Image (cartoon, rainbow, N blue to C red):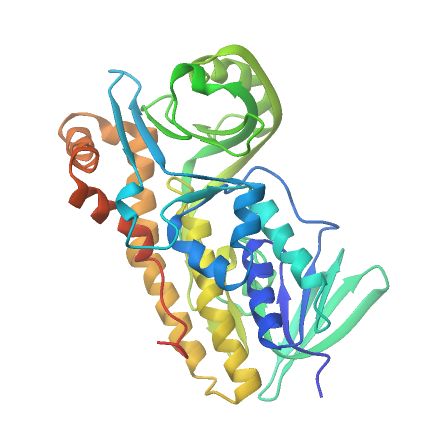
Length: 396
C-alpha cells in the first residue's frame, strides 16, 4: 500500500538513530537527506553517560567508543582568578553500566548508524534528495522529494521530521517555533593544540565574561573542539580573520596550533508548538533548539529518538494506538522546556558571562565546589542528564 512504513527527513544523528531503531525492529524505512553526504561541520561532540544505554540497545555503543574515546574528568576554570574546580564521573559506578561519557563528533555517530542501516534489507538511504512538501490524510502521508532523478512522490504511513533547526517539515506543518535568538554568535573550531600542556582536562569549561569557552578533546590524535562566543553584530564573513586574535586568549598550551575547520552559528532557545501533527512527528533540532553549553541539545535529541522508534514500531507493526505519539510529543516537549533549555541557559550564563559576577557567580561556583568535594552532591549534579530521558510510551 505504501512505498515505506516510515520516511525520515534528515540525515543527522537523530534521524539516522531513529531510522536504525525502526529498521532493526522490522519497519521499512527511508531516510532522505538533501545534502550529498553527512554534514561534518563542527557541532556536538560529547555523548553523556545517560545516552549510552540507548546506543548499546542499538548495538553501536562499542563502535562509537572505539572510534571516539571514553572519559570521566571535568575541569571548570575561572579565567580571571585561576581557580580550578575538578570532578569526575567515577561516582556513577554501580549506578549505570557505562559510567563515562564518549567524545565523538556527531557526524561520526551518524555515519556509524548509516553504515548499520545500509546493511539492512528493509532500509533505504537517499542522499542528495530534498523534501519539497508533504500532504497527509487519515490513511497516510505523501512526500514530494527532488533528487538526482528529478521530482518523485513517495508514500508512507508516518513521517519523522529530523531535518534540523530550519526544518521544512515543521514549516510545511505550519507549526510555530517560539522562543528567542541570542544576540551573540558561537564559533565552533576544530583545532590541533596542546591543551594538556596547560593541564586542561579532556573537558574544560573556561568561565569568563569575555573569553569564556568550552574546550573538549574529540579524538585520540590531538584534535580538540574549542567553542567561543563573539558579538553577532560583527560581520560573519570575517570571523576567520578575527580567529587568531581570539586564539591568543583561548589557547594556553605550547607549540602553536593548526586549525582544521571552523563554523559560526547563531544560538537559539526555541521549541515547536507541538512535536506531532497527524501522521508527522518531529525529533531533534526540528523540534527544539538550544545553545550548546553543556551538550544538552544532542542529548535531548537522542532521547527523542530512543522514545520515538519503539513507539512508531509498535504502531506500524503491532497495531498499537497512534495516540501514543501524543504522549511522546508531550513528554519530549515538556522535558525540553522544563529541563533542557533552562539548564543550557544557566550554563551559558556561567561559562560565557560569568553570571555577571558578584553574588550570582559565587553561588554558581559554590554549586560546582560542592560537586567537587561531596560525592552525594556530585552524583546529584551528574544525574541531571538522566532526567532528560522519557520512556517510549509503549514501554513505560
